[in-house]
Length: 250
Image (cartoon, rainbow, N blue to C red; front, top):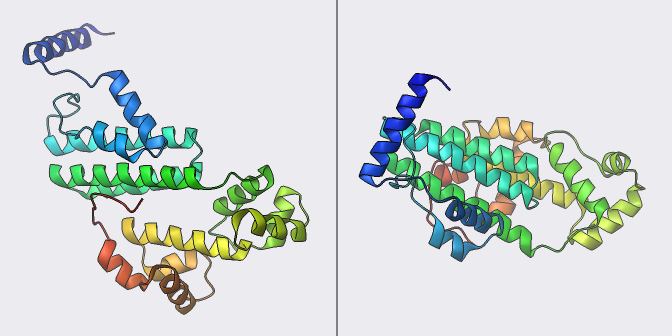
């Protein structure tokens, strides 16, 4: 460690002690992250600390940039804790990327604070919903992983069955038994879920999203999207794009 860095560290530590400003206790942060990954909504509400708290370190003298850096750290930590507890990695990392991209566009501390609450509640909601779902067999878990990794490609039961080394008919029967819906219905549901996130957090047009998620036509995408959400893609983006909410539906 260089002498300049040691000097800066000593001065900063002295100032924090004099002003009685310290970083959040490790145990407090750990309990908060565990509450998020467990989908424990009540504990998350009690333990969530605003990003502007005096107990958070100063990463930049610019208030907006400082908050943005803390936001990125927070979403990175939450993403990894949730993956550890079973959230599908590709989904978790994609959600993280979208939130960081959204934070990068915000130019006010208030906006980043609201986005932080939205992000925390979103991950908590995902984990709470996952905890309620019935555990799946290893074959279905593998098929779900394969589906999610290839949502942007044409998918068929035969293709999925070949990838996990099962007979297509057996996979179809097992999937319907454990998941309660057919494979094609599940793929459609997951594509619409991804389309919702892209409409909310990205700049891609509805046509680009439709093509990316392999819908047969833009009109078909609009029809299916309306069936699942009650909105057209245009209406959905108009209502939810870069909006924050205080509490998700749990």
